[in-house]
Length: 544
Image (cartoon, rainbow, N blue to C red; front, side, top):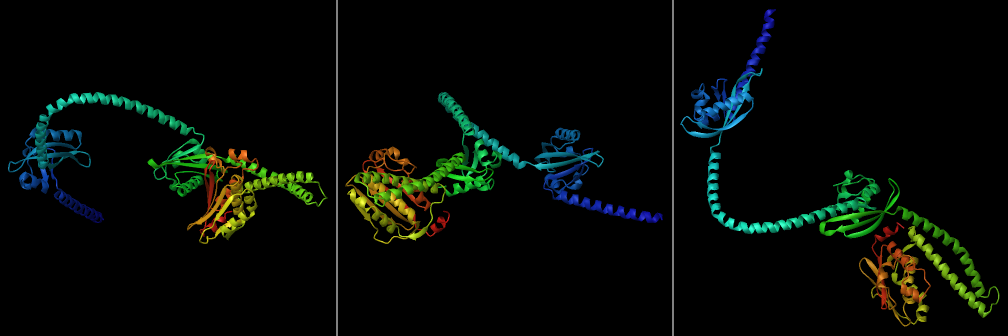
């Protein structure tokens, strides 16, 4: 039984010896492979092992150096001794530059690294010594020092010249000091302005978002956070395209992408979440710095009031139209003698009443058109047609008025056939009627009115030019506003609602077109509008 127990122990011991032998062989191979000279010392500072790099550096063979004191190979023996003692005391890796004496008495500058050897119980058992040949480094240092000395000598020759320049430099320094004081003052003022600007932005009543290059958000004020339902830390330093939430940011990003070439634009956006809100988005592009400022103005309350007003006007207009229609037909029956014969004086009074009633009905119809425009339900019957035919129809309906005022009228038809446009014929007639009626009404007797049509690849253009009173310069920006009438035309005629051009503008824009004008007071006005002829316009009209 004793033999059975001993045998496994011997086997384990044998395996351990083999492992140790393998480990020693590995360490020996690794040590030989190292490019740095390494030697091992016992506690008495006697060399007990070296690697191949050590032999190459010192020219000593293994048998020649093993058992020798470390002091044999160093010129600075005391310094070498002190280095070992310090390493042992601190138990830390120490390093120092010493001079190695090779077998051939050659002096080699080396950097010495020393670390202590300890056993598994923490007992001190000697040192590891690593030597790095710094001969080339020293040569480089010597060359560098020589160059420095030579350069120093050259610089010394320049010193006197520099001394002569110092007086000029001193004067320049004083001048520069004065400039710096001014710059410092300017910097303080700039900082004050920056702080003021930041305070204004922070406390601005509207939301502000500042975009850097690439539409990266650099700043958003408190009102902007509230309107967009975001926190600064969630979106700061992120690009608009990186943000998909909240939906408000996504909508703004899409709007900016579509209008990136406009520089300055103002659009309205509606949001359902977190609460129903309408924002007026104004973007100001700072082209020189590739930055932009987005202003978010909350017009939810104004839109609500506008909606209530529109609903009220619509209701009132519908309620008024019924009795006015009844009055119209009653007056017409009186004028036509269906209710008995009337005198000439009665005929005159009733005719004036009938005309006034017609103007009221026209006003009611205009108000209803405005409410339909504001509710986005104004185009009913879009169809492909020739714009020339619509123009001719309107011209024919106003021929008598043209003759009455002896207007020199000209309709310049294109030589080539115009491409068809998809429009609501009734609404385009109304636009042309408003423009031609204004031209006739505000052009003096004997004046001239010219209508022209032309086309390009993607649009048809209509223009009407008159020699009338024109639009005052300070009122041009209000021409297409609701209820606007120029001060000069109000002196000429008191009739008119001021809604015709507002309605015309909305009809043209609803068709995807554009309307504008050119005018000089007392010389005349030219109104233009364009309509698209692209096939894609059919899809656009589906929205109405």
